[in-house]
Amino acid sequence: MSKGLVFQLLLALVAFLIMLNGHLRGVLKPRIDAALGLCWLVLLAISLWNYGWKAALATILLSFLYGALLDSLARKVAARLLRHT
Image: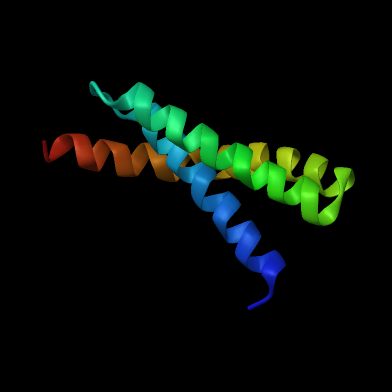
């Protein structure tokens, strides 16, 4: 696996987890959101440091795209999780 593919998979995973946390509820939701936001910022910094500002801009745009594409899946997973609690 190339480094770029691993980076894109991590970015998609973080975007999915941010969307999933948005559909869940609980006391720890703000802390989880802060931790996921920090993970996203680290990925953005890695992109900027290793690949340059154009890749960092692409990372921002792709994270919004991944979030939009994975929102319906996150909603279904959240509904299933909330149904079992």
